[in-house]
Image (cartoon, rainbow over all chains, first blue to last red; front, side, top):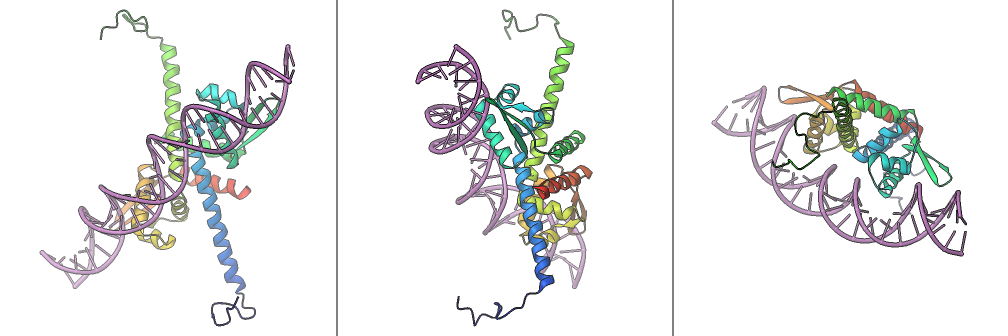
Amino acid sequence: MKSQGNRDVCQTECVHTERVARVRDAMHAENLLLELAEVFKVLGDHTRVRILHALSLTELCVCDIATLLALSSSAVSHQLRILRAAKIVRFRKEGKNVYYSLDDAHVFNLISEGMAHVREG
Amino acid sequence: MKSQGNRDVCQTECVHTERVARVRDAMHAENLLLELAEVFKVLGDHTRVRILHALSLTELCVCDIATLLALSSSAVSHQLRILRAAKIVRFRKEGKNVYYSLDDAHVFNLISEGMAHVREG
DNA sequence: ACTATGTGTGAACAATTGATCATATGTGAG
DNA sequence: CTCACATATGATCAATTGTTCACACATAGT
């Protein structure tokens, strides 16, 4: 911790409150953009989009989705795990089944806006 | 083309109009979902999200973006190429410069909705 | 207890992708 | 034309990713 000779290090107190606040805000915005990219990355897969589209219509359990999209339960479970980790879907256990649905209205809106965009292309 | 013995092939005309229409609609929806996944895939990158966030504030040329985000012009150009191909950004040439902006309101809304979602997480 | 069923997880492999470097195009100024 | 500058592209390489297979876990019924 011998930083006496380093002029970049505060000797006593020298915090530039406003400057620090501005940088902290910028860093926070950067973090949000990073999270946003993560969300889009998770949405950016054919299989997951198909799952989310189905879930935008109604709550479904794993085997419902597997049947509906002609996928293995394993494949569906893997993708749901990713969607869960990204907080894009919710889940609810009932007996042997686990029912999934979209996490919130924002997710629904993302799907809707995206669909509107591609429909116009 | 010897398919006489194949009972799955029409001998004369046997088009099930309503059935074909239903399948065609489903295929069209599938294509849209595929395109939607492509759009999200393109949005799902930290660098591209940062570019789009900047463009959501104002139109910018390549070197503006490169300076703003501390990236090489090459890197920016590569990402803009991808964004252009996905019809997520527009561009406009003026002298030596090429100015980029978001393609339409849907793209702006996608960024907004996404930001709203991550802000709540 | 055992069995069947629904779901989750780990490993391995092929395929895709972003960053970088070098180079190419294009445009305006001198 | 030549030079400087803005932008675009191609190739390469490391890293990430989706799928598959195999197996593990949990729950309900017998």
